[in-house]
Image (cartoon, one colour):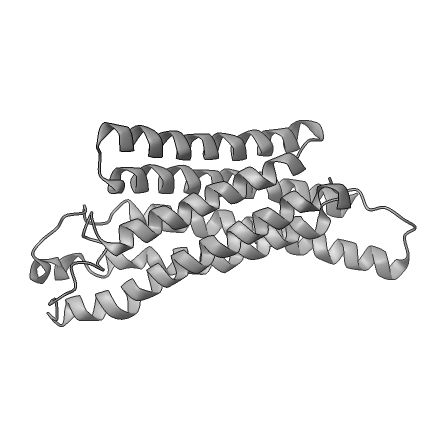
Length: 232
């Protein structure tokens, strides 16, 4: 995957090393931001917490996880773009598709998170809760949960699109297996829960847990991969 064709020049070598260093730090940042979001998120208030006036004691913990999760989205897109740049030409179609789905994922989730931070949070603190139930993260049937499920489903599809790129060596195959497994879990849970008649919130909780785990583990593995490429 990380083979560069053609003759090397001093300038070319420097550009390749800089690109691999950027990929390394993006992978590390992805794993770190995801771990922070995960750590903060598990202390949040359970969904279905009504009425809103009684939610104030849980703020800002309930919304704090949204900040690193929001920053994570452009970092995830940049990491996917870095992978696209070092992918051989014969497999760039897969990385291009993955980058497209990553952009869709980031657009949906950033808009979703931004609404929570700039609309729902101040409205809740000021007691302006009229008409807010459809948009708040506390509503298991609200817009937030639906968009979050959609966004992370797009992320799983991006993972699947990246999988064919990693086919050389144990480390790359581990990354490929991780990406494929995450997509299979996402789709199977969506289908299974839908057939069983469960609310979308159960799928949202599953897919966000799966994808965050994948981002942490794959971020570490990709960091190792980029580090090896830089040294070689």
